[in-house]
Image (cartoon, rainbow, N blue to C red; front, side, top):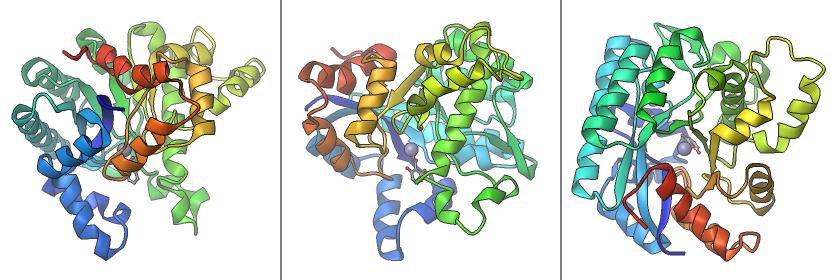
Length: 327
Ligand code: GRE
Ligand code: ZN
């Protein structure tokens, strides 16, 4: 399919490149991976052309700013990454948009940086890589906490989507992964981490306070669609500490927008589509951690996607969500 829009497409800057090392494959693959994640020009555009991706919203690699312990440095680095993405967008405005990287270590600074990115640089929203560390490497701060309500008020006011992207659990809280580091990242732990964070948002009353918030998550919903019915079924018996006014599933279906990033699989797609409906599902690849070619080969030919849905999920939903100047 031509004209697809993708929006879990990552870049790195020199300062965050080191964070991707473990995910790039062996040393022979490292060189190509580094080139690809740093590139915001010809190679990326050429692959987009070849795979029918017209427009990509760029975002900084994980964990990015969220792993910077020093708040001042987090604020400066986020600005630097955002200015870098803004320059790429300015060179190719009809091919690239950008999500703001945010210094969540300081909720006010994060809100301010989002406002700068949206109002002055034309960014389409924010992408944040899970919980934030701050000062102490063993810290993990989640955004359902009270100190983020002012930040969320700004997100609601700007009316842009917030993409909650995975990151890896920190060692201090990862006892259950001991001796199995393979389990901690993209194969499974990423989804555990991001799904828990997403459910915390739902259970915190956040969406009662801000009923227009739009949260994006990737990987066909980080396993939540599959578990959603049971969540609500069991919560009737043990809702301890749940602070939402409505059943959790209501919030998830209303506020969450889910992409196909890195999960190019018919049964999982059918589950997500059936749970969320065709208005809340979107194409994305997750380049360069995944290949645009693999994403497009699956998406363009999957027999569980009708031709009408293919156009809607591959393009039209994103045009609407991001108010793109495209048809
Ligand atoms: C991602 O961005 O989704 C990602 C990583 C690292 C490894 C795999 C992966 O950041 O999908
Ligand atoms: Zn990703």
